[in-house]
Length: 248
Ligand SMILES: C[S@@+](CC[C@H](N)C(=O)[O-])C[C@H]1O[C@@H](n2cnc3c(N)ncnc32)[C@H](O)[C@@H]1O
Image (tube, rainbow, N blue to C red; front, side):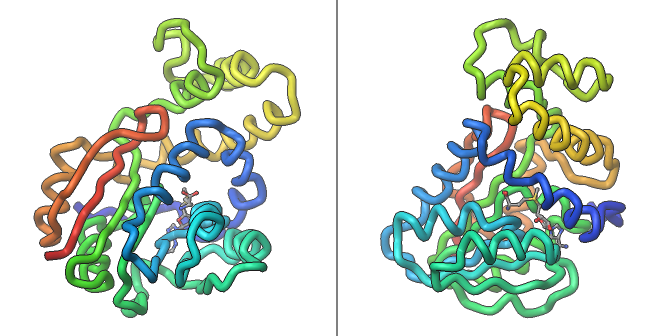
């Protein structure tokens, strides 16, 4: 399962300019809060792989005083993260997770939200995580399901009760994308910003090299990487898997 990604750090740099609009969507905020709350009580050090604009690290820092480290390859994502975390001891580092041999550590806990699917080789990514977490440590990974639908994230945000079919496949046409964003967010500033987000997400959905996985594929990857699956459930309006792993 190895594909050469056509989405490079320069594209994540562009996405960084509007990325934090996502933090205003209820399902995104809930997913971040859920991951932060799953960090074990005894953990002292946490590594966030592909930390993006630092929202998860900032959330963890707001509830616990831990040694926090974030790695990401996009200077623009990291610049926003640095501002957000300026009053925290979090360390941020630029690096390509595909080629960087040393991620530091070992850490008590490794987290990574919405990054595994972008890796050329998700198995290598999980194997590297295994080398980076302490024996008995905890790993929390969130990644989109195959067939995930951004329309259902909009539906969950506005707690709409119409059938899912009303919200399905917003990227089918620019008109549909606009209309569903308006349904969810009205004529607000947020709606305008969400149209920019949607343009990036349309690209991501159409990037044939990304790995949107079935539950079975994810279970097989975890097993092949020599990690133990403690829990798997869905999050982010049911569109992503959240897995909790340990290294025995
Ligand atoms: C969809 S964003 C997720 C950001 C953040 N974890 C979140 O949940 O909001 C994907 C992040 O992975 C980073 N990324 C993608 N490929 C990477 C690589 N090869 N090395 C390091 N970071 C990478 C991007 O720069 C981006 O910040």
